[in-house]
Length: 91
Image (tube, rainbow, N blue to C red; front, side):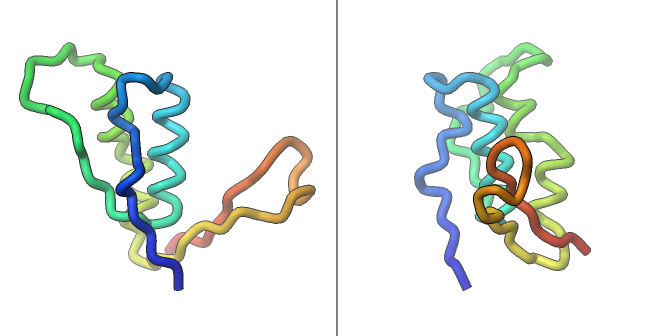
């Protein structure tokens, strides 16, 4: 069993693009890493703040919290027609 640590997760890093933040958060969720927020969420934010949208995406959180608890795996290269694919079962 793999131990997943998100101590290198930068989903709240202001130097990342929105697409990079969404990708990183999705991968951490798919491999069932603990989802920890390391950004100030107490200051006033606009309702459309992208960081909070990424961190609070209910679909991504649902994948992470799925009761089956099975980690997604990176499929072998060539398993898809357009890039690398992560896949895993959900309950």
